[in-house]
Structures are given as structure tokens and as C-alpha cells.
Image (tube, rainbow, N blue to C red; front, top):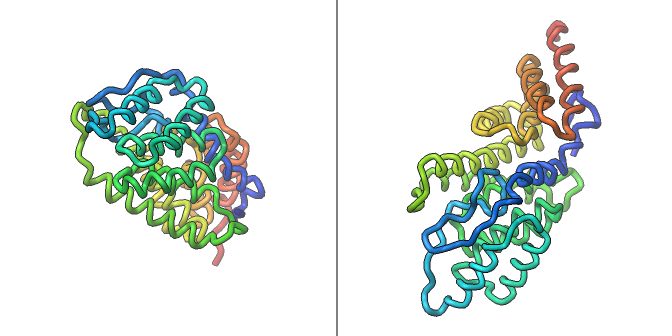
Length: 289
């Protein structure tokens, strides 16, 4: 994907920032472990795309799902330090229990885990399966929307169809998360945090979709919401906000966005520094008649 902006060829560097950013955000979570139990939330950290973050409670099993529940407890108790091993365990679980009450959190886990390890296509495929089984999994919906928007390029087969799907998922995630009741046993602060993380991904995706379409003015409010709700762990939305403002000729705002992006250690730092410098030069030039 090439965005028409004066920041140059480095613009495309963010494409697999989707994967890099997921790995960065999930890195601090890899030491989290512990077993699942009835009435306990999945997830022990606040990383937006940690494979074990979810807005749902694991319930005690009905008699017909007792074996699946025990297998799920064993899977959930595994540490994330060896993510490849846990991914394999998740795959094995789904082969044996493809459609139980405990399959959806495993699908959700694998969606993010695959993306963290660079297997974005596998993550998307598993995410689609999860959403067919659990249409209320708004976090996974936002994850899938973001992954599609960040990996589609001008040469992607059916790119328009893919972007339309990402747009639908992003909008549905935003609408759905607003109606979601707080799970029993989850603190208000945790619930708000998880909802905000979902909104960051969804609004960021919707903004990027507009950037894909060269609709820069329309992209700006979505990206502004994403950075306002985010924790700045992922600089990609600041980068995209800089791109959108630069192309919309809001050069002063572009400088601010690029500088915030450049302040985060990532492989976008050089690109964002260049973007800030170019936007400063553009801001100093007289506006064309």
C-alpha cells in the first residue's frame, strides 16, 4: 500500500507493524499464567491484544461438556512463555472439541496468538470461526477488523471486499461494545479498560480504511478517537493520524501526531521523524492559491 504523502516510501513500513505491534503489546503478558475456573475472567493483564484478554466469564460445564471443560482448564493453565506450545495445545483442543462452550475462548486466543507470531492469515481464519460461534465477541471482532485493514494492500485479491468486511466488523464492534454488560466479578476499571482497548482497535481500523480510500478528512476523527483512548503502546495510529492530517493539509496537527509516533520505540520512528520534518516545512510554506 502506498499512501500519497511526502513522507515517502517509508510509509509502507507499517504494514507488518500490525504483527510487530501485537508482539510488542503482548510481550509483557507472556509471563502471565494461572488456571481458569468457574466465574473467573480470562486474562490477567491489560495488553490490548494479549491472547488471553477477553470480556467473558468461563462458566461451570453442563454434564455433556465436562470433558471439554477439564481439557479447557488444562489449556488455560498453560503459561504463555512458550507461545508455540500453547498454540499447539489450542489446536489440539479444537480438533477434539470444535464447537463446545469452551471452544470460543480458544478460538479467540488463537486469533491473537497467531498474529503475535506473524501468522496473520491463520489468525484471521480462526477469528472468523470464533465470530461464527460467538457473534458477541466484540474484542475479536475489533482484532480481525484491525488485522485486515493493516494488511490489505493495493495488490490484495478482492481488497475492496476485504476492506468492506473490516469496516463492518469495526462498526459492529463499536456498536456492540457499547451494549455489553459488565461480567460478574470484573471490576469497573478493568471493564472500562478492556472496552477502551476494543474501541482503540475498531476506531483505528475505521480510520485506516478511510486512509486506504484517500478519504483523509474522514479518517481523522476515527484516528483521533483511537489515540485518545489508547495508551500509546502502539504508535501506528499516531503515524496514520499524521498521514491523514498531512494529506488533508493540516500540517501543524500532522507534526504533533508524527512526533508522538516518533517518541515510541518502534520501526516507525524514522518514518515518523521524517514525516514531522516534512510537515514542518509544509506548514512554513504559503498556502497555494
